[in-house]
Image 1 (spheres, rainbow over the protein chains, first blue to last red):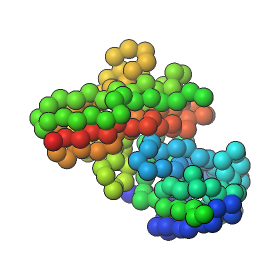
Image 2 (image 1 turned 90 degrees about the vertical axis):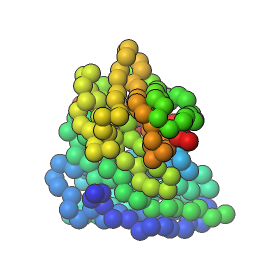
Image 3 (image 1 turned 120 degrees about the vertical axis):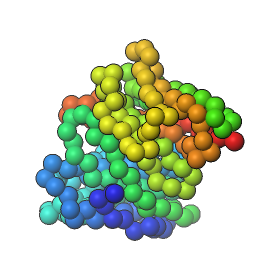
Image 4 (image 1 turned 135 degrees about the vertical axis):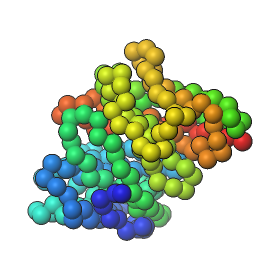
Length: 112
Length: 114
């Protein structure tokens, strides 16, 4: 089973920041938080990952709480193309083949 | 930017027939995976593959399934005798391993078993 909890859905206005929450209260010290998204039935798209520090890349920012029990993915200026199912996944980063365990994710709808 | 590719994009087959789904992982990646997603359901792990061996497989990956890396670029999933319930999107993924091991997914093959 997935080790994360996300709300089932969220709406956001185009151009506004989208803040996507995720709870991972049982995360252990060697586990990273990964975010992927899936647009329609396309392949999951990697967004960002982090261990304990906040991370930012060209797609998004990831804010992880100090106790690491929750995190927030931030899309700073949401567009209609960001409408997708977003998955928060906790995964040990062992440098090898560690499968991803997907939950149901959260459907983000960006409205015009 | 390198990407994982999969062929065909859509495969239609009759129940009981064999199908082979093909993937070309990113060229310098060493770890390979198959996942599937039945319509409306979660993405499920099937199998991982490294150094020409299966590293891990799920309960779904029974004797009807097999994987192979026949050459230096392709990674295939074979279903020997397809069932109606094998109808799903099949996604291939790969990662390089080591300290930079983010998995990257292909666009998927939609398998329809009639």
